[in-house]
Amino acid sequence: MNGPDAAPCRPCPTDIPGSDPAPATALVLGGATGMLGQALVRAAEARGWLVHTLGREDGPVSSPDWLEARMAEIQPCYVFNAIAYTAVDDAEDHADEAYALNKSFPDLLGRMVRGSATHLVHYGTDFVFNGKAHAPYTEDDATEPLSVYGASKLAGEQALLAAAPDNACVLRTAWLFGPGRKNFVSTMLRLAASSPCLTVVHDQVGSPTFTTDLAAMSLALAEIRATGVIHAVNGGQASWCELASEAVSLVNANAQVRPITSGQWPQKARRPAYSVLDTSRLTQLTGIRPRPWPQALRDYIFQSFAPRSEDH
Image (cartoon, rainbow, N blue to C red; front, side):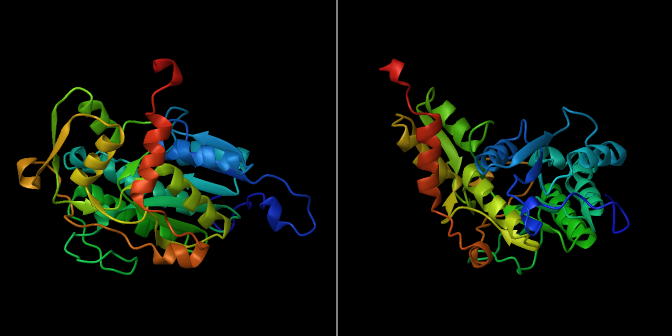
């Protein structure tokens, strides 16, 4: 499965004229443990797809021989790569590890699916931008990452699209929250339960994104076999402080959320001050108009943090 001369994957059942409907087969890399991966598994299973997951807990997932053997067994119609090095500050001191997962691995995947019937969806980041814009970034805007993490993710999307331009797409997304793993929102709610005051950065503005919504966007783009770079986030914008304040208010916590500057919360890696993403291309391709992040946040909190009936 590593190029035009390799044996092609089994075609999607819907691609076979006159065939009986049969479920598509999806492989979610990182689907067993990752926050986004778990959301993708739930969305694909709800769609009736046959879903497989592979991750580092299953074996040497970045080994070409090992992964190619698993791909040959599964013969996926769609592959979603939710594996990445996401420790933004740690990446400053572990660049080789960050580039291995964020650049070399997507490049490997691209070379494996090139010329096959498999369509690959890979995830990029808003951290490819320098944060100097004053309007939402489009896919055509110039990139200038400020951190090792951002640079490694940019190198990965470029390598992937160079390797498999006809059957891969990169979904740039941002500020993920959702069930299944610790995230910024869940951390804020945990702290609000035990602290009377939270201090949160207010001078970084981006696009909060619910993994459930991102998974739905991902499946829609996979089904039309979209290619290139596409921005996929919830609507609107927020600072970290605004996101925290909204979350805390939704659970009626007594904690106060106090804004501070980035300078008052020093971090090793530089973050873009403004990284809101424009989703016009997503809407043009799929008809999906992402709902505003506050609405998505309400769903997440009410589904994941609402008191159980036996607590009353």
